Image 1 (cartoon, each protein chain N blue to C red):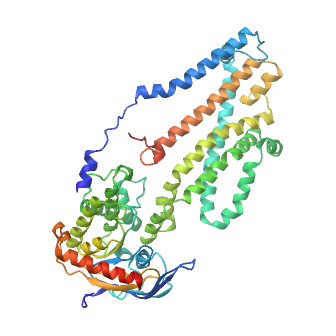
Image 2 (cartoon, chains in turn blue, brown):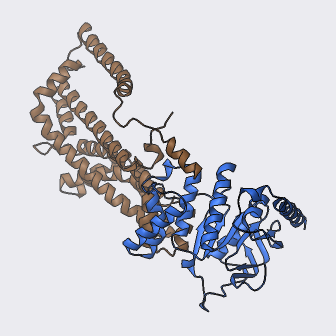
Image 3 (spheres, rainbow over the protein chains, first blue to last red):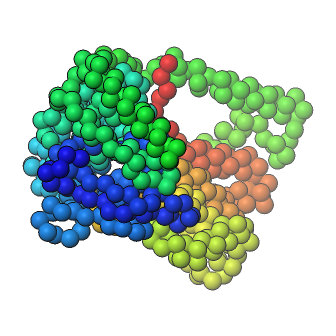
Length: 258
Length: 280
């Protein structure tokens, strides 16, 4: 990463060994800089999702450390500052869009009036105005994913973790959501860690890509994508984009055979 | 937001009211079969001149039902009261036991086998003991009906409480939810369809339990339920009345099932796949 940007979270020599003996990560080092859009790119099963889960505090590291340097010297995980979007929309089917997005605020005991305003704001951000009272089953796959993103944004997180969020969507919907996510990021400038197995998606979205090896995962190389933001469809067909895609593909091939 | 607009535009205009034609097509075939069966029954009885104390025809049964309504109706109320109370206790106790089971694996492992034992032991076999031990007959009957009815609620609700989406559980953990919050916001709603499925089975079983227990108790007098009316009619060769009482029990069972199905639909219709009409 370009030095000088303060890190939000640093993973140092992190190992993760699961109870069944599977070594998911070995000596993984990764710095996530304030305000960057970092993609973790790697083959299936390389431990990309494990990295996100560890950062989110949904598991313990088996070795190494996760540091939060800018958390004002406070130890531990600044839980309130993390938003997580899973591979699946992971919505409560019995609750309306409004109540699904409200959940994180309700768990924290945010007063109703403030919570309502923030839920409306988050729903508006992902373009679902007017769907507050719809149930998840009435929505398309892309719309469910938008609800999931709204729920992650409603707490105003400083760090947004996305675990292959658009992998199960069709390409047209995925492009649309990529663009909307980029536009939101350009406005809000949270720090994003985005897990994907798509070279093209990672180049299009990221300011930096960390390429991971096959299991046990560690970062093999990093590529900074120095293209101006905000990006649009023109970028998808530009020479620069193609050049980056070629470069990142080569790095990925290298990583898988190292 | 192209995908949003597409979805809005193609939102299906589902007919809200009752589709009469479809309802008739669904109800007509079983009615025709039932009617034909009744006619055949009446004809067999009349043509073969079968005496009423062997097999009464449906018309005679219906006539008896009307004539003996004054005796049968209070008995129906007695049986219904026991059934309803047993179902209520089974629901409350069943849900509480299921919640206890999900609090600790140890509790579930220790107690679940006994719930199974209670379930597989024929109630006819233990009813006499319970009637001996418990002096108050209605309470004894209630206990018998409860034993038969509570298991589906316990096992289904336990399954439901344990089947919350684990990514949602992760999400709850991420936002620092307390155990109580996880229970109220996630586990309980997840268990709802399972619980309602168990309740539907238990409704019928509570009635069966109540009737079986009444048979075993065999108590007469004003406090006697429909099962005793059947026994009594058998002793006195009033076979048409026996059929009439049986008919009342069957209809009661069907009504309980329909009522619980409607309740389940009412609660789940907004979101659960089982209650959502398929389109196209």
